[in-house]
Length: 423
Image (cartoon, rainbow, N blue to C red; front, side, top):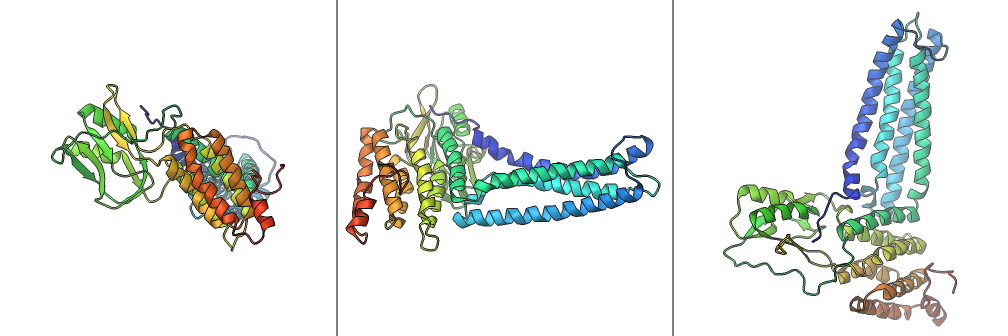
């Protein structure tokens, strides 16, 4: 029985809160340290660079002004990066952890500026806080090093290839954690029907509207096993749910209000899809990048080929995994929960159909798609291999629409590089 656990991606999602907390701590800690350290120096000689009061005051003022300017520069740079990422897909910025990590950088720069301003307010004509000013210089050096390291990481992120690699890594993790059983033979019949009649079932409505971000199967299983219930989830991860729409069907009925609350809490609704528990959304993002790159306004088939590299890598993880609707059973082999999941055909359509449509006149896309289909044909079991036939037929049809037979011959060749690969 598949039994979801807290995954690496789930921990990464929770890690956004420490990022925010650390940013606030750095800013607040700078203020407290700037207030406490100069007071300590008045009664103890703590060392530091040699400054007279006038030089300490001038140095502190310059550092504070520079840190504030640098914060504004970083904010502008991050804004430009977000715009670049969103130009490839408006949804990409929401799945990349870089922007949460940038909060720590803002906290460090703000903390440096606040620390130096507080130290500056405590410089006296007869006393220079030597260690306090020295630490301000150290903080500036560390913040500058963090900025340079952060910008070095952006070098690949703002390119199409870097973005699709980042999404591909998240998608691989989501696939391995959410659809993690490669040994269960696929079922052609779907989930086992739950025994019920119209009189002994109850439908639990959604308490509010939103996108289904995650269905906590382990929480539902715990409730269903403890109370001897059969639960059918009527929505799928990634679907939009209206307030009051049927969310779960429970048998036998009735169920208590406490049980209803426990079950509805296990279906997490939010404003947008998340890749953490929704591998299909990862494919959706890669396809979005590819078809936007193939639009006449962009005309960048190489980025589409890079997206197809990651799509192929994801699809090759799925040939022997159980996809489609799934049952969760307890230790007595009793079905307790039935979930909806996309099957192999739905995922293949999602991954390839739109790219074939929008890349119909691209030689690179034709050749890369043929290489992808060949790789899948080699890896797929016989009962899934027939799913590739319509895509071969579509490629053969679209290649005949190319302007000349010579171009049609070029497009009909398999090439994992798109164009220019060795024969």
